[in-house]
Structures are given as C-alpha cells and as structure tokens.
Length: 600
Image (tube, rainbow, N blue to C red):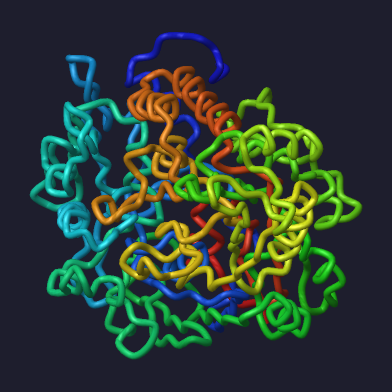
C-alpha cells in the first residue's frame, strides 16, 4: 500500500505500518579477527561529549561508541532495537491505542543482563531517570537541546498566547508523556501518552538523547553539565553503555578501550579505537592516502577526487547518497539588514545561480540543484516544490521596489539609515563551504549587496549550544549572531523530529527558551499549524500532507535556501573489517562500531 494513498488510519494501524519498515542492523560478511585498534579520523575536532548539549555531527561520531539509546537507525535507514530488544509494534501487542481515540501506551523492553562499564546495572530505571533528569535540566535554563528531544512538550504559550516560563513549559500536564512505569525487574517500561504523538520513536531512539548513567550525573550541578564529559583528564571516569569506553582525550583526539562488560549486541573484537582530529581536510586526506588512518569521515562529493586514486594496497574511496542537504540560512531577526522582509530574502535567493555553484563545486557531475527540504529517497518528499528562479536583474529590481536603493555616495543599498551588507558565516577548515560563500559573495555583489565571510569552529562555536555560548559569540546559529549561515542539515528517520525543532516558532532560542533550535527565527502560523498536525497525525497520508506543507512554507518563506543534496565521501582503509556502508541518517557512521574489527 502506498503511503500516499488517502485512507483513514487508526493510531494502531499507522504504527503497525511503520513497524513493517523496522529491521536489524546490517552485518558485514568478512571473517572477523580478534584484537587490534581501528583509527578513524575527522578534519574538525570534537568539542562537546555530553550528548544533551550538542548537535554537531563530529561530536555525535565521537560519543556514539560510548552512549546508546533504546533504538537507532541502521545503514539501510531502518529502525532497530539497540539497547531495547526490539522496536514496539501493534502486532507484538507492545502498542495499545487509548479507547478514547487520543493517546496511546507503548511498552518497551530492554535486553536482559545489561550493565554499565563500571559494573552498575543498566535497565529501564536508568531510562526513566534520564527522562526525569532531562525535565529538570531543561527547566534550569542552561540550554539543553537533547532535553527538548527527550521531553517533547505540548505548548509553549498560554491560552492568551503569552510565553510560558520554563517551569510551566515542562510542567507534568504539558508533557506528551503522561506517565512512565518501570516493571519490578527493570526490563520493561510502559510509557503512556496523553495525546497522539507521531515522534515517539525518535524521542527514544535519537542519538542526541541517549540513556545517561545516574551514578555519574546525579551529583553534577546543571550549570556544570556542559563540561561534565571532559575532553581531557577525567573522561575515563564516565561510565559507558556502549561497546567502548573513553580512556583518554585531548585536542588531538580521543582514545577508547573495549568495554568488556558490554553484552548489548555483538561482542567487540577490537582492543580499542582511536579518533584523530586533523584541523583541515587536507591534513585528513593526506593521512588517509598515507595509510595513517583506517577511516576518513565527513567529506563531501567535492573531496572524492582527492582520495579516488588511493593506492589499492591502502584502501578505497566510497561515495554514498545521504539524508543531508547543504543550505543557506537567513537570520530573520536581522531587521536592520532587511532579512525580516520576504522581498529581500526572495531577491537574495533569485541572485544565487545554483547550477553554476554546483558546476564549480562538483565539475563534471550531473547533480541537480536542491529545492525541497526532503532529500530524494525520503517518502515524505514533495517533488513539486518550486523555488525562485535565477534572475539577478529581477532581484535588483525587487530590492529597489522594497526601498533598498543604492546610495550613489557609498555604493551600498540603504534604507532608513541602514546598510544592506551581510555577514556570512560558515565552519572553518571546509574548502567547499568557503567556495560556496565565495560564490554567494559574487552573486550578491551582482545585485549590489556586499558581504563579508567569517569562519568559526563548528563544534565550539557555530553549532555550540546555548550553555556553551554567549551573546558575544560571533557566528553562533543558536545565539543568532549571524546574517547568513552555510551548513548542512542531517535528517533522521523521525519526520516530526526533523522539522519541529528547527521550524516551530516555539523553538526560537532565547533566554526564556534556551533549549530551542529554530536558528533562522522563522515564525509562521502556517508552519506551526503544519508541524502541530504532523506531531499528532495518526494517518501516514496526513503525515505526508503536513510534511508537504512544511516543505512548501520553507519554499515560500525562504528562511533558508537549499543548495544541493549531499553525497558523503568516505575513505575506507584495508584494515577496517565490519564496515558495511555509510549510514545516511543522523545516526552517523560510528553507530555500529561493535561490528568493526581489524584486518592485518
């Protein structure tokens, strides 16, 4: 049955249908060998290893071998039980719809005999504690993006439309989760929802909100949580729920040793892992070509030619389609730059020649420009989405009509005493993004809009959370200290979770909402309504319709400009066994390190 077929589903039917797509993690076919250490590399360093305080992909790669959740997404894009025995389904009786038609109960079961790396029992009591802890951390105001994911709330404003404070936002009656009941043996957990909620799988399955060790975190003050998993001495004391545990860390990299108490899946054969940071793509690429690392990560299609000719005795280059798209974000709060004006944003979009950009970044390829915020291959993608055409003359005329006219004395467009000169931010050490903004600089200059390019560290600045930044942190997407930002969105298997936190007006980051991720500051009633519908949709066709509206509102509002859909370049060394393929979702490439092994 097509997901686009218009039918009326009960919640049970919807979840039963979704359950048919769940699978087990793919396994390698090589003959494993015990012992050895695999070295994997990144061109940018990890900076934050507390999963609840970061969304930077490098950090996810770094902590995934150590922290785990109940569910995850494998390299085929399927949900599977990670610490849980399986993903709940209607057929198994683990999902029960409330007779009232609104609300449901999910029973989740954990694998028996799990322990933390320090020997403490690991069961559903830890999951419940993590949930309760996330509530309190979110209310504290330190800025906890992972808390928002684990504890979704129903409303952020009162009946009069006035903002709720954090205590009210996270009050028990305002949480989708009505109750959590853990069995006496700790192996199962009943989660009762007071309202239908389409994002429940992503709530418990996202890698950004894993189960945390109570014995370690319960005594740490909320204000100290961002530095609670130190990139230095003391990291070895953090208990692990995954197949490896931290043993050492510095600005150069992270060392892991096998967690001999791990029994959540395949017993790891490796003695350890080493994650090395190179500071630039050139440094990482050179290390891979020289055989110094076994896995080179986080490279775009533009990097493929640089490693394509690797000596076969060292490894191979792979290029995989992923659920990612590169885009430009506008900060709609920059009223003095006119970015709150749709006409200005439309003109800037019309000035960008996406096909020319792709030809420069990826010469000789057949890539098409991006428009929809759903990459090809995702079932909720709307192929009919249209974006503003490339028309620099029309763009210049639109700016004139909007009152942003060129001052003949300064040569800059001005209105009401303000100049239209843009600060464009992106991550440092990424030549592809520098080229992208260099071309954007040319496109905007052609319509007499000058711009300045600023780079900043990805993990500690651009994607750093509220607690790790200040109002003076330049180029912080969450603090809103930018005009234009170039980066990529990495999507998960949770459609609601993909869009709610970055587009709903309730998620605009501020002192009163430090957990939000709506960094473009879009506040659209149509978008909010679509996301609210998506969040409680019990009909897959309705979910798809709501996702279509989300894509259309982005195209109409132009809070962001999708540029191209990304393919991931990965360097795979001959010593790495157990590698299947790059995981296309936000689960990242280190989601299954227990299956890796060393080939002499």
